[in-house]
Image (cartoon, rainbow, N blue to C red; front, side):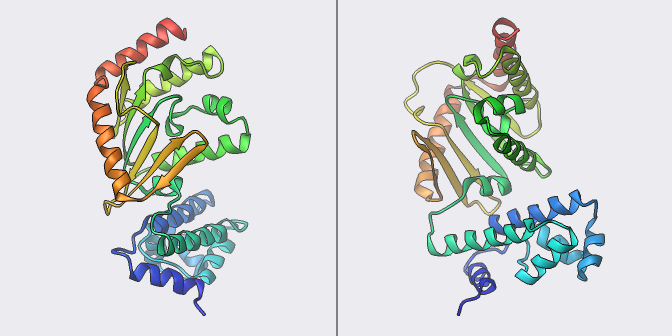
Length: 276
């Protein structure tokens, strides 16, 4: 019988590195819950009777941990099953990777990416949405809280480099009230000055490559996953051919877009003339 731990071990043996996106996602959840409990790594290590270095390795995705240890972590952090759930999700993700090479859950790989490229056609991307803007789109408070949490996790140190091409019409499409739009555009302007973020506006012109919104998440080991928006939601893929195609599209879109400085100037103009 193949145990859950053996599935993880087999997947790691077949991979180039134990520092996989799935392990880093699990480790990030352990770190989040440890910090929420007000503990440093040394304090948590003492509670579960391991070295501080081992806790560090788990949080950085450098090593796997067994289910019994996940249970001990959950109890020590009073996580009410959140770590067990994260461990089970890790197991399912690894099974999917081992048995279905092109399956990927995009929000999870986005959390561990060191480079994210985004092209948006209709609304501001979720990573750049204000809470008020997200509330109008999602409506469900739990979904909004989840989006804000994901945004915080992706943007936390070490944050990935993020390149965004946003269609100009998004600046004019009213989502919610005038106040919501003004706050959202001011937030975009603020983000455009953040190190590692490059925001460009694509003017309202015909660009052959501008078909559907998409995002590409690139990991430190150069593996990639893509999310392509469709009429019924979205499609995820880890197929290198899909990534290569989207890279080519993104380069064309960037070439047609305004540069970063002109983008800021346009956002300011739209705020003053449309949303004030």
